[in-house]
Image (cartoon, rainbow, N blue to C red):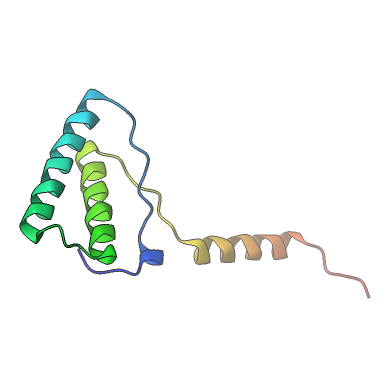
Length: 92
């Protein structure tokens, strides 16, 4: 995965509690514990953040959960353009 600034990452979707989700989460937790054991449990805050974000992304992909795409600049621009088109010009 290409390294992205935390503000550029798409948000992780919520995971519903199902048997399949439980199994996938157990596997992810085992993988996290193996990584911590190999690393010697001396993880920096950045490494912990990357580990959990990546794990959550893989869990969502495995379960077929699609994240919401965060693109506030385009959304805001479209909203502003629409508002400006609908607003009548001011009479001065």
